[in-house]
Amino acid sequence: MDRGQPDETTVRAAVALAGRAPSVHNSQPWRWEAGARSLHLYADRARTLPATDPLGADLVISCGAALHHLRVGLAALGFRAKVHRFPNPALPDHLAAIEFEPVEPSESHVELASAIPRRRTDRRAFSSWPAPDEMLRQLVETARAEGVEAHVVSGKARDELLIAIGKAADIQEADPAYRAEIRQWSGVYPGASAGVPAASIPAGSHQYGNLRMREFAPGSLIQGDRGLLGDDAGTLLVLSTSSDDDLSRLRAGEATSAVLLEATAAGLASCPLSQPLEVAETRELVRDEVLGGSSCPQLVIRVGWAGFNADPLPATPRRPVIDLLRDQEQK
Image 1 (cartoon, rainbow, N blue to C red):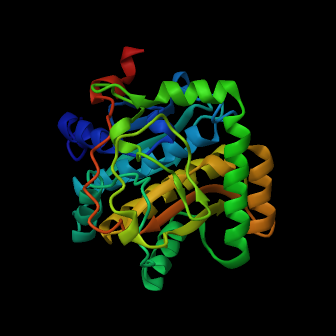
Image 2 (image 1 turned 120 degrees about the vertical axis):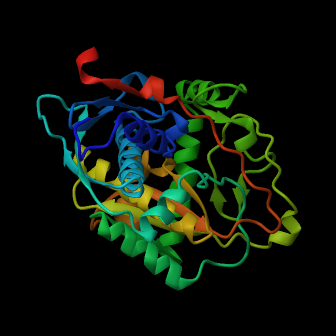
């Protein structure tokens, strides 16, 4: 690339960091193309999950998380990402075009980028100690800086959200196509480059109080001593936008990444929960009963302290950069 632009090694490093972003069933539904002075993000529709994500909302949110991971990685590597979202209306899968501007990395840039390889989706029970209000307020402000609202759900609204989560699970698990898709994308064999491995799925019950987690293939992740955990005090946040189009979903994905990295940097465990928003009926319940009909829910994020004496979580598999990135002229 030109002088003042990132070289190939820098671009590949940033794309590798972007590839660490969370995605629905760890499907990693994105691809990148490098131009002479730009980088382009595309949705990879070949990795769509039709039974889990019939509208493709989870896919776009996942891509938004990868876009924010890229922005964070570039900043730590000395470049500000100038993002043009949906630059070509004729190509709806062209989600973003990124240009580069040299910038001096700050301590906060490096700290946030260092959280990328440490972030994990923790599906285990959390401890009985609630996250401090000051931390939760910071997470709300972090989402707001990305143009997305984050609602800390408590009281009756939390009860309604838990009902919606359970109802969505019942509806999906009654669908043979959904059950087949879960079998395909979870409990994946060692060496797989995508999907949720058994080592990342808790063994035993996935019911924590009134919170029902998604049922994947049987897992091997040890929960630890539940007797020492007490009641799970994980906090549920709902990310929402004023509209419900793909631009809003992309922004919600960027906010998801920002919140998860901020939580990781603060020492909190976290877990995105998309299930209640994948079913039309329960998505409406969350919109009307949890958010009061005021905005469009995009994702639920669970945050809290990891369980007492919890073992570190293993990294989930990731697709290699060679599979994700190509030059534009190689079409």
